[in-house]
Length: 74
Image 1 (cartoon, rainbow, N blue to C red):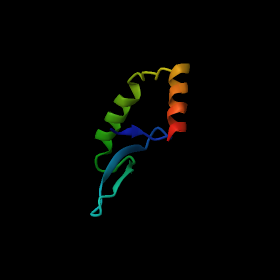
Image 2 (image 1 turned 30 degrees about the vertical axis):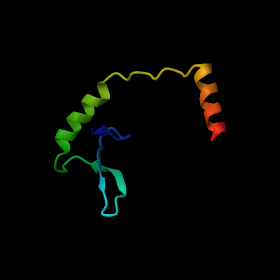
Image 3 (image 1 turned 60 degrees about the vertical axis):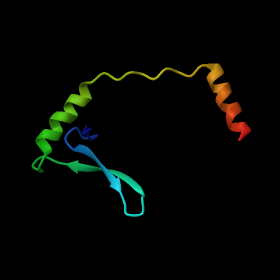
């Protein structure tokens, strides 16, 4: 989904694909005022900017201990 750039004007639209050798790639197309598709992408980016973000819960001490132990076993 499109998102606003740091300047608040540029819109970053994710693009990506797979090369012939199977390598996957991703990047962002930068749209500026006057570019084709800018108005639609700007509306989508502004909508996304207003959506509330759900904070991720902090891992418990037990989760961290289990994770570290699993890394040490490998």
